[in-house]
Length: 85
Image 1 (tube, rainbow, N blue to C red):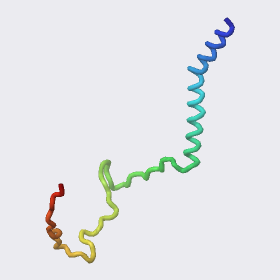
Image 2 (image 1 turned 60 degrees about the vertical axis):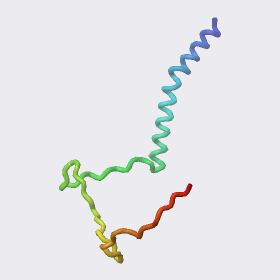
Image 3 (image 1 turned 90 degrees about the vertical axis):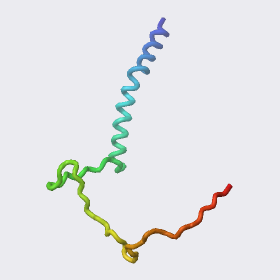
Image 4 (image 1 turned 180 degrees about the vertical axis):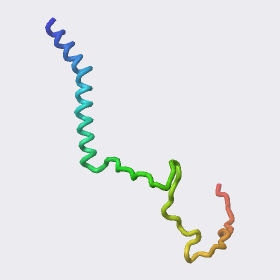
């Protein structure tokens, strides 16, 4: 009878108490490691005063034509296609 009582107590401790203890211990350990390693989420910059929610602000727009290329490029030369069987 004493064996079964100890067995049931150990079973309930492993089934219900151990997951709670491990979750708390591992959760704090993981948070500490993330904080120390630099993999945390960087803080976001506050929105600028001139923009409304959902509006996009672009800081740099590249030039429309690249230097050294002419703007009248219509396409490449035609290459005949042969089907290989």
